[in-house]
Image (cartoon, rainbow over all chains, first blue to last red; front, side):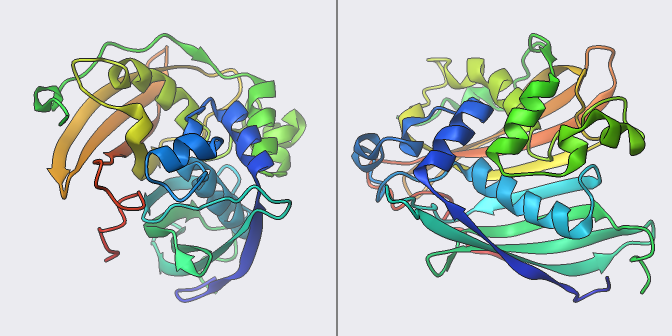
Length: 139
Length: 160
């Protein structure tokens, strides 16, 4: 791992069932995440994923790649576009990439993160600082 | 209706303690498809030096959101939750949340702004144990979309 090292892209399928499960697990029952009627009623194109579900999937990609399930030190995103999830078997896809922006003197890696849905970036200013695995800090 | 700007700088008393349960961590991990043994297997978590299961990085939103609920629902703030989308989120960790943690939150309103017909409110939630150990700080910016708003999010704020 060095500055510029890229994480292999990960693609997650997001369906309505995933949003229902996430709503239950997280306690966020905002109906824009499960009701087309409510979502379109407030001007959205349709049901959208919880921003925090998107953030969780991106976090999962990063921790699985960096081997740092318990080693995330800072994690921030801006949600710039909604992830619209149609009521179909296949839902939509979210593709996550990451690149090492900086290796700090104390063995941490700062990663720039990208998440794309339907050809558009859905996050900006997305960044995670993780404890780099032993042996990967100075290669 | 704009948000009540007098809430800026206001902090709220510590929230009712939230006891982090193993099965809640496992449920949350399953909901996001995370299979790391540190989230599921107590022995694996202990091997990493933790007393019990580790929670995935975004798990603290459960605790922070519950603590923010009283503010969101406060009629004097004037926030229409059906028009809310998420703008920004940040977690700054002292350590991961772990099963057995009894967590309490202090919520502070950092900023309220208005732009292009949308209102924005940023909260900072200090999450720590009931014994006073700091665990994680959570910043959330919510966007209250105006009736003429676009497709949602902070979409008109471009990346750096």
